[in-house]
Image (cartoon, rainbow, N blue to C red; front, side, top):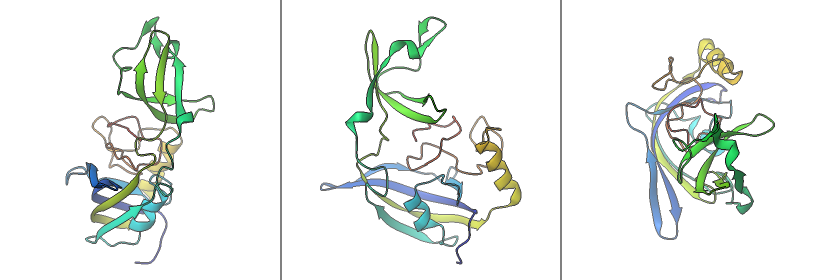
Length: 202
């Protein structure tokens, strides 16, 4: 298949981490909830898109990404102690969403969105890990391409609207549309900001 930008791609896959003890399943899609994305917009890891984009519908794949091709090293500097006040709503701490193990959306001073995992909730501080859950890991993907075609102008425009903050941009439970751009149903290799629905671990 000739290389083209802005392909509408749908895949079913299993994702494993790989270490000296073998392969460990991290997540897998289901036939009714594949991973859909439009290539060329940086919605997935570069290495993931590179291995998938030229595969025709019906082709299977198995490939491995090193930690440097995936999410890099785990950095202790990305573990922060944040003031509890950050997570206070109307004078009350947000116990419903901020608890040990919770993954929560955050925004920095530049307006960039990302996710952090709560490690501890103290009386004054909340210890938050901003490393990606798969930082430091070698990843193995195995799966099937269920769609690979040129994205339509409408799908690309829908994605551009999403990138500009207009609408959700994915076909999750509380959104309308067909998952254009990269619908994040807990896909750890999803590389964009997500739409705030699904599990949004990436």
